[in-house]
Image 1: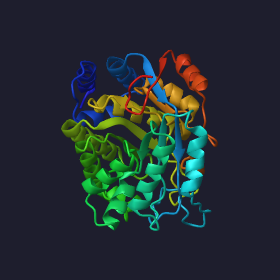
Image 2 (image 1 turned 30 degrees about the vertical axis):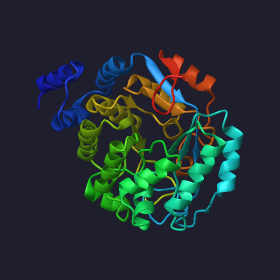
Image 3 (image 1 turned 90 degrees about the vertical axis):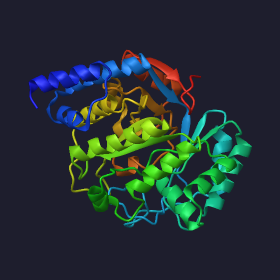
Length: 357
């Protein structure tokens, strides 16, 4: 492709037409980061005006004991890291304390063989008794795959059972990179990409919304990132069930891929911009600020991002254990609003289904 091709692809994107995998890859490899940011910002403004959304949320990570041994993981109790298990009572006491401060509880953790789907369903029920109106976003597709198959339940049966117990939506974790050869290198023994996509498809068919993620910056190639985005776009065409897409940057501390240098900030900006340009059918692109840091997340508001996740309340260890800048991630509504206003955007609190509050 030539510079004329570049102009043609950019014009196509600015006309809000769908670009192809080859066109996206060409932009990734050849377009200036400033140009990509400008195009992504135009598309974002068309979809979301100048609004940047966030919610009041807390993360609960019941345990870091996990049957899997993913090479990128700094969270699990494998390789001599200290372990923890939160009891239902501890979790419920925490919910009791914060129930009037947050609108969403986000629950993910290690795949723990000692717990069954019935145990987790009971936890959801207990939380709903304490906080009936709180939104429960819980369990990655990898967790759902294990807990359902362990009890010989289909995905649909497992999801329906959890929904009846209080599940409202599912997060996007566990997607990593869909390319099988890469997945084999970094997390070969856990749920496949096909399984991840199937579980989210089933959730959408049951009217359970979900998010989607991509772990980038490790052993994958740019082609693999584009293919990942394409598979998400294809499923979204069919189901319209993804609420947001979150690129997750690989962090290299305290894991088995610590010999890999982390990708640079230019690549971060390009990845978010390309995601916004390519995923024309997913409205929200989220910057997960506990992983990226507040300053970079703020800059990304000019590269297609319209969602800054939430207040978090210093409740997640997953990225701080991997070397993220935010060691004790927490922001007040006032702080997150100020950060958005400084970027010449308009802060807007949302609920978990992207209704404005």
